[in-house]
Structures are given as C-alpha cells and as structure tokens.
Amino acid sequence: MNQPDLDTLARAALRRRVLLARADPSEFVRIAGRREGGHPVRMGPIHLEWQRKLTDHDRVVLFAPVGHGKSNQVTRWRLEWEMGRNPAIRIGVVSVTRGGVAAKFMSAIRADIEDNKWLKLVFPHLKRGRGSQRMWSDSGLMIDRPWPTPDPTVQT
Image (cartoon, rainbow, N blue to C red; front, side):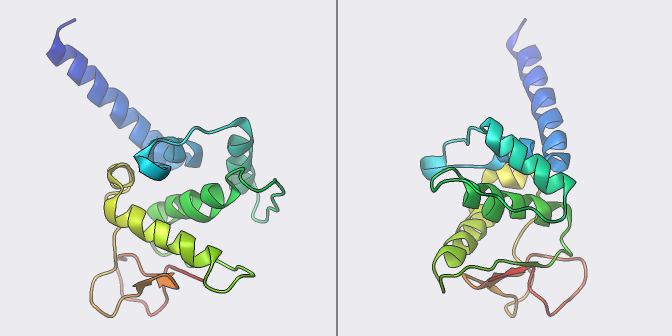
C-alpha cells in the first residue's frame, strides 16, 4: 500500500472515531481526554462502567478511593462531552471546599475548550460564548449558544 492510500485510510478511521466520540462518552475521553503533558487517557474497566452508569441513569453515586479518576472522568470530561452534545445545557458543580476542587476543574475545562485540539476535533462548536459580558472564570463558564441567555453553561 502506498502512502496516499495509508493517509486516506487513517483519515477515514479518525473520522469514524470522531463520529463515535460525539455519541459515546467513553470514546470521547479516549480521544479528547488528556493528562498532564498532553498524554492520552487510558480508560480502565471501572471508568467504562462509570460512563455507562452515567448514560443509563439520571442519578449516580460513585464510591472509589482517591486517585481513581472520579473527578476527571465525571467533573471534567463527562461535562465537556455533555456541553458538546447540548450547548443549551446548564450544569452546577457542587463541592464542599470553597474555590478548591470545583475551581480547579472549571479551570481545566476552560483550558480544554481553549486549547485541546482533540476536543476541538470532536466538538468544533464548543467555544467561549460571544461578547465580553459572557462568564469565563473559575466560578462559571458560558459556552457559545445559538441564542442569548443570562445563565452560565456550567457554574460552581
């Protein structure tokens, strides 16, 4: 097989993965989820189960030890996927610590929307709301919507 044929196959495979990532949160995390240094995320069986539970049920409680990826899986990447699928969504992130964990993840989501080329590949429309009055801080984010609204997309 020559290089142009390989390039065509690779582009087609990437297009299929992007389409799947728009419909499947686990595939979204595999493509767009990035750890420190820009390294891709490896989804473990427990992460796949969490994503299935979040898809299948409107109320989910997750119990897992510190360091198992609950916050990144749910508070970061799942919220990005939900916003990409529905720009009209309104999300509240509640945390016991004031300005700590919730602000950290709001900052990570903001950075992903601004700079993550993989997120932009899956959801190119996911970007900061138009106009200087739009919320874009560690306490809340307003993504671009087809109509004006006073409510932020996600807030702590």
